[in-house]
Length: 398
Image (tube, rainbow, N blue to C red):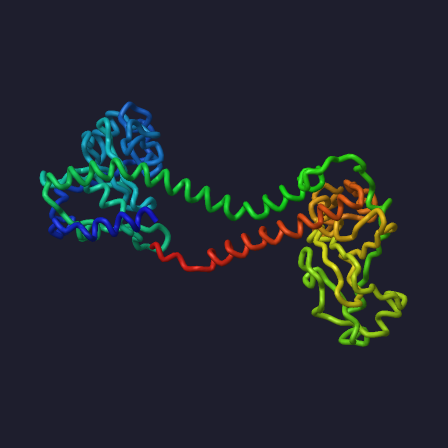
């Protein structure tokens, strides 16, 4: 985004003439060196390659990883590049650049350039950073000398260049900070609905959501307050069990906290008798996934059966446990269950389900918690929908 803003800035400089970079670059220097001769290496002369760009501080190279000897300098095609030269990358790290703080030799992937007197180095580098340098080549991308000299650069008077550089020096750090904050904000916005949901549920089980006390609360195991039954999948290979009129629920049919009114697949009466012993799960029953997608809860709005990744849950005493309370808190509580790793993904086994610890307030408090969550949780869904809508819009900033 910053590069696009910079390109737009340079494209709209009204006080500029447009010239080829070949008109302002006075000299390019290429050097090669013999890697195979040991006595040419490990001296005191800095020898710069592409990997040294990562060592630049404030755009300047103070030292290099590799060094050559005086003999290496004498017997090679390289000369020392004096401070003030701009070093640019012609292969591998296209678009990278730096300036030298001490005399340095360079390898064949780099070029040293000097600018004419009517071009400020900082102005040129700001412009150069906006170029889309793609290069050519099958294995290693690079650009040729004539390509480097053919870019069009807007060239205002030198005094104006100084003003532009001064202004960019002041503004760009603020833009960098702003972009970092924008990125952080975007991450927080995407994370916020889920975090808010967890925060609400955490407050609910700690008795803080309704402003009441935790008097009368107790921790119980799921197996102590409810019975649960796992489903099954009829044999896929036998068509006699499928495409009947009995709804068969899978996790894909479930949405957290919602009522299921339709299923993607249905089974026959034969399947119901053989695999479910003729027992159908009645409308109004609470069901929960405990494999793969762990803790997703829904209420059946129709009579149905379900597969083996789902349990139907029946509170033993409706005067003590409200199923809608479990509907809301189980997705959060299951995060802390004894989750096992199976071949097809994570799961809660029968023992883990039975031992799942549930914070159980008095029934009146359960009603208050459910009422409050029914008000607040839809707001989390609205936020997620807004984020999804925002993500679906094209980025027109570039």
